[in-house]
Length: 50
Image 1 (cartoon, helix red, strand yellow):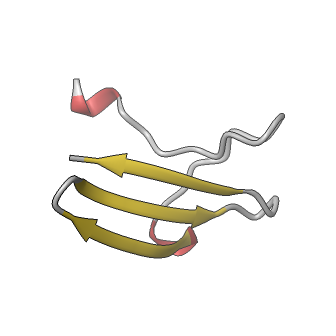
Image 2 (tube, rainbow, N blue to C red):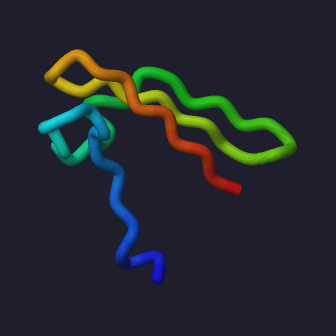
């Protein structure tokens, strides 16, 4: 199932893949890891993983 996960921009009409080059901030807390990515379109996508 993990193989099917991907990080992509969720801005309307974008759907670009997001990777290390777009990573702006990563923070790990007891509840998990949060990562903020800035897409070339200007949108910011935040992911949360445990």
